[in-house]
Image (cartoon, rainbow, N blue to C red; front, side, top):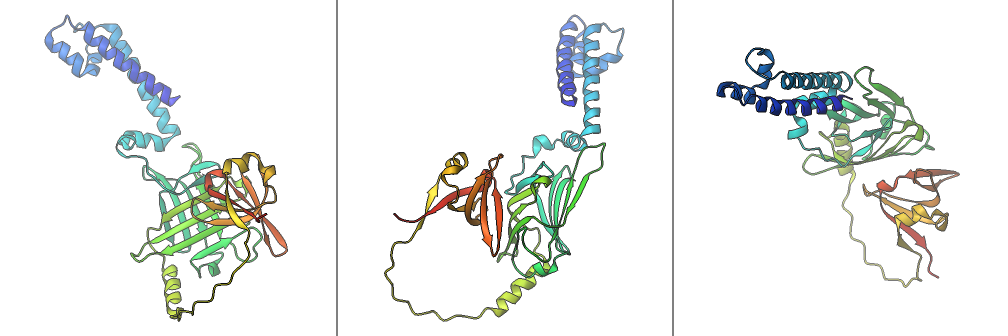
Length: 330
């Protein structure tokens, strides 16, 4: 509604402006220039010969624009601020390799940073946080002892808490949710020589939460605990002597991985059900498991054996870079 009012008001104002200039051609050159350069001033000049209907149309167009902007400010203040600041013209859309959803809303964070014991992902607009996802390790401090953190729903022990925040509109308070466990997390931290830290994440909350996040990013600052972990690893590392080359042993032909068409697997799952698959995601992570099925929303479901338990992993086709099947030679 607000966009319709603004666009229709702009159209009426422009049409009335041209109409006013054309109707003023019989007046003096000064009044014609006034109508051409400052048409709004003519609304206050009743007895100077300006036509009534063009001025009325111009007034209606201006009122429509003002009403549309008022509705936009009331219902979507972040879009109003962006429109008035001109960011939609000057600033190109930011590119990010992180993408996902928070409570069913599209989530593309631009900021990734560590604050105390929290890893925070934020999506901002006009200097305002629209959506955020924070992984709190205060409930699982023992996990902060390695550069790779993995959790699956069947794991026992400590679980980081996931806090979700999202904006629902100007007339309602922001949404807030805390998830305490039973989700999938694969987090890799890679401190680099130049002092920055690259990050890879795959986070999938239960389907009911409508929340997931995958991709890569660079932390704004390397946290102190990660610096300590890297220092301890460097201190424990000892130089190893090169081993003597072993003699090559002839082996029989072994089963091998063969590339498969992702579209074929999604559309014809019965042909590959029970087959051992190797999925390589866009972030470079590799997952192996046997294909169980393809869900109604086209997610590949593979199962992995973890001791006496069996875990099902769900993957969206957009997250998968390559699919391979393990077939024995005939």
